[in-house]
Amino acid sequence: MCTAVSYKIKRLTMAFLGKLGTRLQTTVFMLSCMSAIAVDSSIRLFGGSSDKEGAVQVNVTDEWRNICNDGWDALDALVTCRQLGFTEGYALLWYDTMNIHGTTEAPKNWLDTEGNEFACNGNEKTLLSCKHTKSSTYCPQRAGVACGVTEVKYNDILAEDWGNHDVTYEVITSSDRSGGRVLAKHAYNFQGIYLTGGVCDMNQRMAMLICSEQGYSNGGQVLKVPSLDGLPMLVSTVSCGWNNRDSGWCERTYTSTGVCTDGIQYNGVQCYTTLAPSVTGALVFAALASLIILIAGACAVRWILKDRKPSHVPLNIDVNEPDDV
Image (cartoon, rainbow, N blue to C red):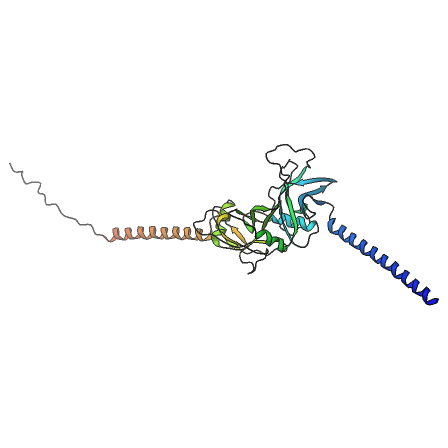
């Protein structure tokens, strides 16, 4: 009798503990999901096919606002995804299919704009802490991100047929645009995602072209800047010849998974705001050489005139001799 009762009590206890464990697991799972999705209630993604992509919207004084796409780059996306709680995978640019071109007035229910020309350096904790231009002017192109892109997904996009689509480059700095990290962006988007990232290595001619395209006609030189965690490396190597006039058409190779297999060599540029040091030195040398030549020439002429004796030929003219008649 006691044995049967003990057996029933044991079964009831195990069933209770089993249900309790299941509920605890469910509660923990729900809490973990909530913390992953709502890490920061001041920023969200809207309009994407999943919670990992969409147009960026920020909450300012309890009002959701858009971010304008002007000046939006990979470092801005990196900070945005980190603030959203995505610590794994890459942050890429997402194309907002709701962007409205050629309009001057905001459509119905279109949110106000918070700002544009964001210039994150990649280390900020929040998007609004990045340097940017605060503007409420209507912007028909909203900034977007695709977060948590795995290396496999990155490789799948790279494996697509790119054809002759351009790659654009720009210099990213925290103060000015004369020198710093070079970011690359592919002109083609795959399922709404633009491949973007850094450069592993480039040659000197590439640096000169990038600086020229940034408005520095005096050229520039290659530079190595510290790597940045979470930033994918799009271009493995890019080499320009002296016949290239556009950096987007220089010979390039892509990484396979967003990683520099041979490490980072030259991933930035320093543009010259004045004449290049080598050019300045050559001009100074030429000026000094010309001055020395002029001084030497003047001294030589003076020496020749000083040592040269003039010849005096007497004129034997008899003033008393009558003229022949």
